[in-house]
Image 1 (cartoon, rainbow, N blue to C red):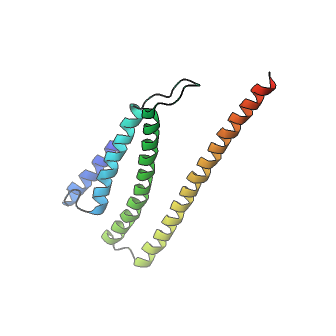
Image 2: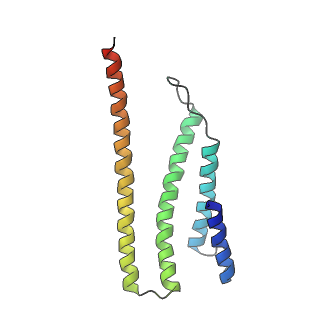
Image 3: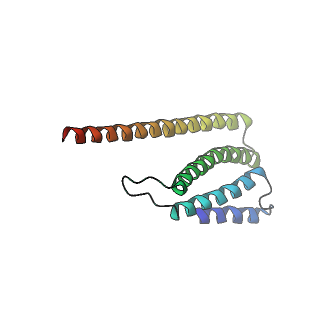
Length: 144
C-alpha cells in the first residue's frame, strides 16, 4: 500500500505535466518515502531482544534509539507535509483564504490533540510497565 500510494503520487504529477520532486512538498515526500523504507527494513532486520535477564547489546540499544528518532522525525514531517498539502490544494482549487485559514486552525488543533494522546499514552504505558514490574518483584518477595 505504501509503495502503491507513492507510485500513485508520482503518476499524478506525471499526468499533470509537472516536474518530479520540484517543490518542497515533493522533496519532503521523497525524503519521507526513503526514511519510511529505512524504518521498515530496520524493523525487519533489527537485532533481537536478549533473553530475560540478559543485557541488551550496544547494537540493539543503538537500533532502538535510531528507530524512535526516525519514527518521531517521520511523524513531524508528516504533520508538516499535510499542512503544506492543504496550502497547495487551496492554491490549485482557488479555496477562499478564510476557509483555508479555518481549516489550518482545525488541522493544527488536531495535530495538537494527536500529539498529546501520543505523549500521554506513552507516559501512561511506561508508568504502567514500571508499576507492573515493581508489583512482580513484590509478589516474588512475599513468596519467600
